[in-house]
Amino acid sequence: MNIISTPHNIEWLLDSNEDLPATATIGEAAETKKISFPYPPEMATGFSEHTKTPTGIVVIQDTHHFMPNQCPPSIPIGSFSVEFDEPVLAIHTVHQGEVLVVDRKSGETASRRSGIDGFGQYSEYSVEQTVTTSTSLLTTALLAPVRQLEQLLDRDTVAMVFDRLQISQINTHGLHQIPLTISKRLEHFVDHSLRNPFKALHLQARFLDYLCSLTLHLGSDIVKTQNQNSAQSRAQAVHNFLICVGAETPTLSSLSEKFGASPNRLNAEFMLEFGETIYSFMTNYRLEQARLAIEKGCQPLKVIAYKVGYSHVNHFITAFKRKYNCTPGSLRP
Image 1 (tube, rainbow, N blue to C red):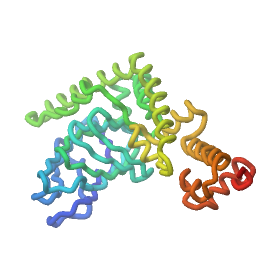
Image 2: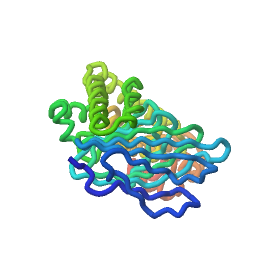
Image 3: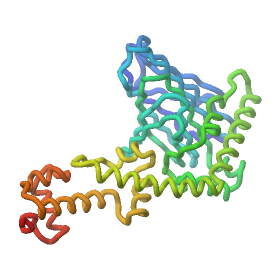
Image 4: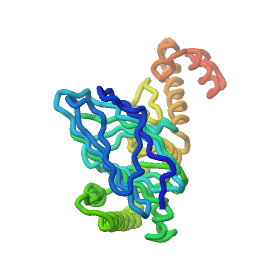
């Protein structure tokens, strides 16, 4: 079973003195292929080990070491994209350090660090990665065909896992707090001292161990209750943040990064708790604050408009009239 129909393409964003091609490919080797990140040697070193088994499981482990006082706070690494012959479960965990991941299709941005793992069901993906350099970065990505999962478990169990991870639809993803006792199993997933077929069998056994632990964790009633409480708490935290943010207008992507959930999930949780979308709440709340300020004070409309997030007073007047069916000036005492 070969799940990768086209090679895993890399477009480097690193500045390097080396004469590198515009793209590089990994994923064609039967065992492990190692590719170096083209860092300037005085700045950092890094490499990616890409292992594929005959059953279609792919493990990508990245290691980055940064030279003290030689690096900027963050470094754009590259764009990574791949297409699959069939849907796959993708798992991404950070063992040490932090990496910023941007989905090139949706524009969503998420900060990945230890304790918050990324999960997705994909037919294709394309992302850009930027690393922070305050500490070394160690990550593991795991790709497994959905059909392989259904053979190892069963279709209903896989459906339950995907439902709890909120990735039941193709090309959906999310971030989840997974116990480190489970995530750490991915850190030493591949034993490079072994050779096929023992290396593949060992990797398959490690994968089953991780999969069973993850399934038991997601299937417990405790986790279900925690997920529900977590969603309510996160929606309330977003609400409290929005009423204190002032004139700044945060984007869904920035809120997603701040509160550790995808924009769609964050919006859905907020709507379930408060009955309106995040954008609708921000608009209505700010216009209500503006109405109170107009009725109780004598500040110029331009000042009030700026305080509630409008850069142009005419846009504020239009929005106010749409909501209250009157102009802001008509409410002056």
